[in-house]
Image (cartoon, rainbow, N blue to C red):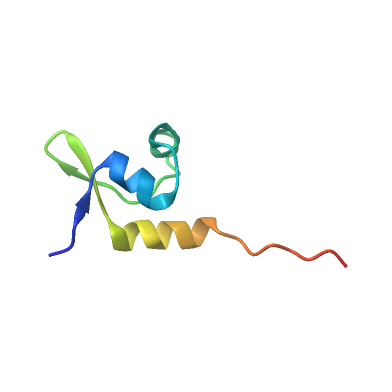
Length: 62
């Protein structure tokens, strides 16, 4: 079974501050999340998909 990340661990995995991830989730711009009791739960596969959508190639100056 895949590892389940807490919000803190998910933020570390994504290279974000925990509060930044919480703000993104609150604004509806965060990754897919699940609930484990009262706590948020995340899977690495969902975090990877979300990160792929956030990363854009750097445009080269002409």
